[in-house]
Each structure stands twice: as structure tokens, then as C-alpha cells.
Figure 1: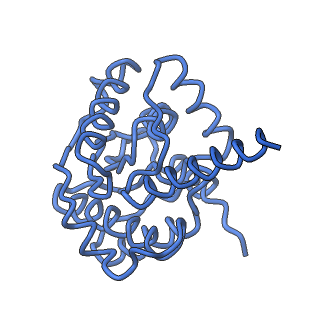
Figure 2: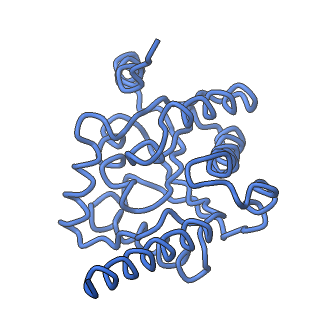
Length: 218
């Protein structure tokens, strides 16, 4: 049976009454956070967690974090959204995906990448007494919302904090993020984040260039 995560989120929002529950929102990047923040800040007291040990190299990590902070300011949400930021901690990522380096994009390596970030979010949500924890990861059409929600629920049971279900790409959420990025001139990265996705992006670009050159010679 297919679950409708957005309807589940609707029910949580409807039951909250006038209370603004506290949610720790893991953000994978500024663009994905845009429409998610616009939506969630209407109903929740949001703290954004920047914890992305997968992002490679350090310069890209720094650029994406600066983009995230600037976007929150540009959207007028600086007084509504607190930021909890952790350094890159690349060792967390590489320890988690050891042995999976040659897995294809979207496979087991990505699952473990989701897991390490959601686990840290859940632990911090428990430590600081949040009502829920969640992630912007479900905004992208390239991410498996079922897998992410399953991991979130598993971790929530482990750490003792409720996972906030979501499929933020639904209800035009992804298109809204594109609109907001254009409005605020947000840097939109060309690869997911890790060195493996970067290398795959470079390989794809080289393959396209080679194919174009072959066609031009014909």
C-alpha cells in the first residue's frame, strides 16, 4: 500500500492546535530547503541543521553553507529559523560508506549517506528536546522519499523522537523551490555532493563532449 506522506503531515499539523511544535530540520542544501522552509515555518518552530559530511570538496561545502545562510536571510526568515551548523566531518561519511565506493548513484552508498545524516539529526533532536526531526531530502525528484521516510522512522524509534513524514516534492513543492531560487538568485549545485557524484558528473560531461565531437566529424 502506497503511503501519502504529505497527508500524514497534514494530520500532524491539524492536531497541533495553536502550538508550534519544535522540529529539527536537516537541510541538504539551500535550494532544497527553500520551499520546505517557506511551508514548515507556518506551522512549526524550525531549527535548521547543517550536517553534510558527504559534500566534497571543502570549498563546495563552504559555498553551500554560505548559500544556505544567505537564503534564509533573503527570504526574511532569519528571525524564525535558527541554524545549528556542524563542520564537514568527512570521516563520518567515509566510515559509513566504506566498501560501497563503487556502488552506482542512487544505490546502497546513497542509502548509507542518508542514514548517517538522519541519524545525527535524530540524536541531536533527542539531545535538545525537539518534538520532531525531518529532512529536506524528500524535495528532490532524484531522491527516494519512501526510503528516506523508512530510515527516518527507524531512527526515530531508535533515538526516541518522532519523525516528521514528508514528500516535499509533492503539491508543486519542487517547482516552488525553483521559483524561489530564481527569485533570490540562489547557487544551484550541479552534482549531489559527494566526490563520487562529482566524478560521475565529470565523466558524463566528457562522454557528451566526445559524442558531440564524433557527430560533428560525420
